[in-house]
Image 1 (cartoon, one colour):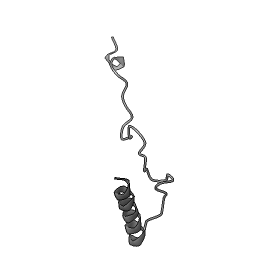
Image 2 (spheres, one colour; image 1 turned 120 degrees about the vertical axis):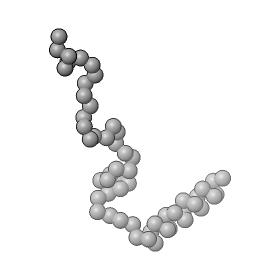
Image 3 (spheres, one colour; image 1 turned 180 degrees about the vertical axis):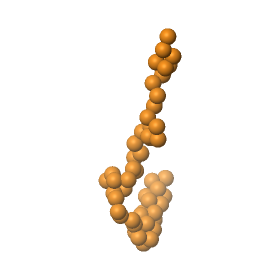
Length: 55
């Protein structure tokens, strides 16, 4: 009997199980771009305002 052929197949090593929604190189997170501090604060304030108005 060939015991090497029994059991589950070996998974790919060092590979993610799924793709992240904000992975590098996507529309939400393109390569080579980084927000400035002012842009980040403006986005955070807008999100906080939207959450406050919603609730």
